[in-house]
Image (cartoon, rainbow over all chains, first blue to last red; front, side, top):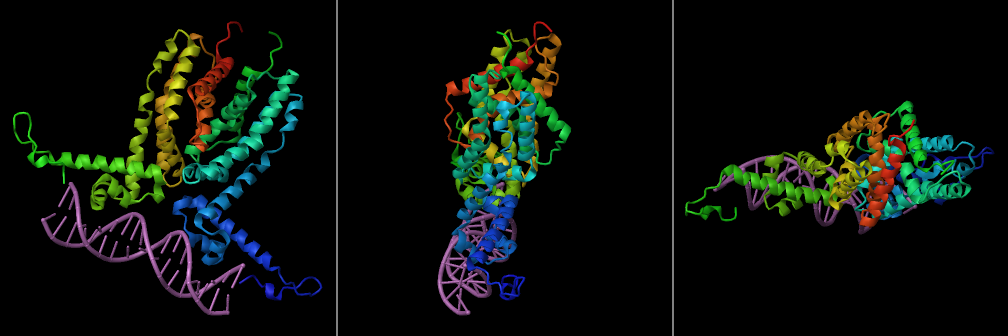
Length: 226
Length: 226
DNA sequence: GTCTATACCAAGATAGAC
DNA sequence: GTCTATCTTGGTATAGAC
C-alpha cells in the first residue's frame, strides 16, 4: 500500500502514475534504512529479519525478492554505507602541499578527520564491521581500501611532494602517514572503541590532535640545517 | 562418567577417592574451554549452547547449573580471559627508567608488546570484545582497565621518573604513553584488525616499531641544550 | 512486485530421575 | 551434581494468491 499514489495529481490536476520501478526503489531504500538500524543495534546474528520487516514497512517476502538472503542484505547495507562514511573527508588533501603553514594545515586536517570518525554512528559501524570480520572478510578489505583511498593515499602523495620541495623529510611516506593518523585520530579512536560513551570535548580533541601533530613534525619536519 | 576415578589407586595401592568438588572443577574448566572456543569462532549471538555442550563433554543442564545463563557464561569466560592475556607483558616495565640505552629499551618493550598483542588468538578476542561492546559494556571497561594497569600505568610512572632524572621531556606523560603505544603497536594492530591474515614478518614488525620509537624520541627525548 | 500464511528448524532454558 | 528428554519461542526462508 503506497501512500495514495492511486489518486495523486500534479499542479495541473493530471494524475501522476508512479513509475513501477520508482515504488520498488523506495521500498528498497526503506529496507536498507531499516536493516542498517537493526544491524547496528543488534549485530548481524542477533538482528531479526522480522524486525527489519516491521520497521521498513514492507513484507518479508519483498525483502527476500530484493536481497536474496540475510547475508546478502547485510553486505549490501554495510558495504554501501562505508563509502558514504568517508566521503565527507575529501577537503584539505591536495591543499596540504601548498599550505603556507604546514602545522596549522595538519592540525586542521586531522581535527576534521577525528571529528568525523569519532561520531557515534560511525564508531558503531566500525565496531560492527570489526566484530563481523571473520564472517565477512570482504568488509574488512573494503574498509581498508576505502579508508586508504580517502585518507592515506592522498596524504602519501602530499608527503612525497613535500619531500621533493624540501618542506618535509619522511624517509617512508606511507609509514609516516600511518604514524600521523595513529598518533592523532588513533589515540582518540582507541578510547571510544572500548568506551563508546567516553566524553571527548573540543578542548580535549584539540589538545590530543595538536600534541600528535607536534610530535609528528618533531620527527619529520625538514630541518633548516644538517 | 569420569575417566576411571572409581578404581584409581595411588603409589601404595590405596584407592584415590576424588574430591567431589574436584570433578565439578574439572567440568567447569571444560565448559570454559569449550565456550571460549565457540564464542571466539561464532561471536556471542551465533554461538550455540548445544555446540558448547558437545565440545565440553558435559550436559547442557550442568552448564546452566554452573553459569546460569548464556550471558553470564560469556562474561565469565571472556572476562576471565582478559587478565591472562595481558599477564605476560609485565617484564621491562620498572627496568625502563634505569636502562642504559633508552632507545634500545623502548624498542625491546614495544616489540614484545606488539608480538603478544598481534597474536591471532588475542586479536580474535579483541575483535569479539569490540563487536559486543554495546551488549556487554563491562567488557570494554575491563579491557581498558586491564590494559591500563598492565601497560599504560607502569609506563606513565617510568616516564614521570625519567622526566625528573632529565632523560626524558614529556609535558604530559599519560598522553605520551598513549602516543608511544599508538605509533608502534597501534599501527600494526590497525592493519591486523581489518585484515586478520595480513602477513607481518619480523622484519616488518621491527621496521615499524623502530620507526615509531625514533619518532617518539625525536619529540620527547631530553635535549642536551635548551 | 508485493502480500499473507506457513514450513521447517534451531535456539535457550528447564523438569525430574538418579 | 549430573544427565536425558522436552518445552517454548523465535529464527530464516518460501509457496502461492493477487
